[in-house]
Image 1 (cartoon, rainbow, N blue to C red):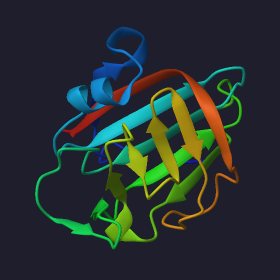
Image 2: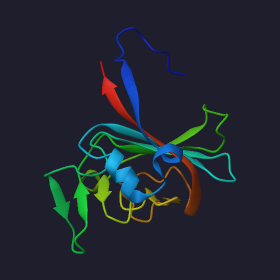
Image 3: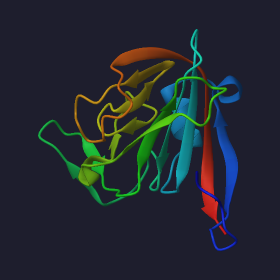
Image 4: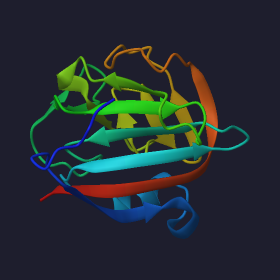
Length: 162
C-alpha cells in the first residue's frame, strides 16, 4: 500500500466534459477537450459495474505540431507518461488494472471517428461506444479485454500540478 507524504505533488482536477451534460458524441468531446493539456478520462459503461479510464499528459486532440503520420494517414502523438486503466467493480477501487504506454510514438491517435484514442484502439471512444482492446500493442495488455462497451457516462478532467 502506498502512503502519501508531504513531499508528494498535489493535483487539481477541473471537469471540462460530461457526456450527460455536453452530449455523448465525438464532436462535442473534441470541442470540449481540445488542446495540449494533461487530461484524465473516466468512462462508466452500461449494464456493467466496470469503470475504464486513461491519463494523457498531452491531451486528446488539437494537439498541434509534433505528430507522425503512418502509411494510412493517421496522426500519432508521442508521450511516455500515458496510461489506461480499468476497475471491474466501481465500488472496489483497490483492484485496478493499469496498462502503461509501451510504444511512446503511438500514445495518442487523433482521428475524426474518435473522441479519444489511446494507442490506436487500446482504449477509444467513438460516439457512445467504448472500444477496449490491445490489438495494436501500443499499451501493456493488462486490461485483458477485447470488447466493445456502451458508455453510460464519460467525464474528462484537466489535471494541474501545484
